[in-house]
Length: 496
Image (cartoon, rainbow, N blue to C red):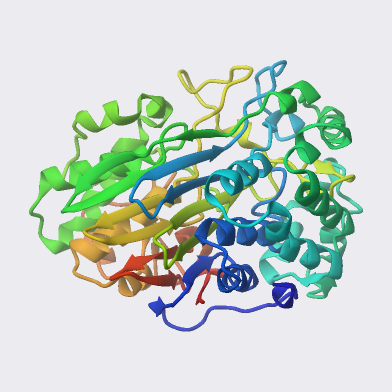
């Protein structure tokens, strides 16, 4: 697997392709991470092994989007057809207090590392140390980081310096495009590989993390780390157009996607030139209830009131472009949909020099009651991986984009069903995104004029702008693993 542990800079300029594999398939937010997943699959690892290895690689390659100081959410579909969810998201400090500021007060307990261990033990086939070895090599030997990292550093340099990251290798590299070594991060990855999650949640490292948070205005403690667990549960299932859409349960806001799908089915049939308008209105109506996500499936029973004749301009979905997706599948029938994240770019900006990583700002996801800040509570979470099943076919779908995630996934699903597109065409189709009451649209969106005529406040952005996500997909069809990756951002697909 070490042969994939060299940096690469690749921009996906080609068309979206449907790739079929023998042993397995993977799509991730970076081509090198996809190569790591391919290597694991070729070495007889399963889809869960490949997903963990790729997530760890992304923590090295896309440190603005994800890292050891962040979260990871996953849905795993087993060969026997059952599905399980893994919530790798931590709680607010037991001694924390509102208000949440743009500093260490926004840090929640990082959940990703514990989720890796839980996943590996419950679903994987290879030792955790073997799975983290490619990421360790990337960090130790150095990886060429892409333009997106340097751009995020330029935009967030003041926050990073405030959080103690002025001497971090990532900050020093800037836009240079050179190979960057991250020895402190490599060391931590090796320790986790040797000793498991205890290397992160007990002993010197949580003490160092807690100290960094306190220096930056927060109150995270070693006790918060010692009490952290990964929640394992069941999906929320929505039957839509002959398909079963499996969603992460709360605190993930994925149920808002299910609510929009239920609302769309109640409106059927619709003229094709009204479908995008209906979807925009359903998303905005659902997001008005975002703070109630904890109600879970109960939301799906309530109607979403929309106007098919005009735009209602209901503000709800917010900005943010964070996160990286990983979707994997193997020939035995295991399929994984997952996302890893720090929330904002570089999270809180709070830097842990002993570990070479920054910490999340997930507490910024708290809003109004019942999603208000409470010590020991988890806020509503933007990460929304999904699985789609029809007959014997299973597809994992995930995308970055904060509140844009459920919007992008809705458009892909609608594209494959209501617009009659195959999966690559549905992923490639120009998109819209509702954000702060405005409607962002890609320059080539076919129904843009129709949306404008209905009163939407359109803001045209270039095709492939980051606001429209970067879908990764993998699954099983006719017993054959497949993968599809967006041509947006640095998403990449591969097979083994």
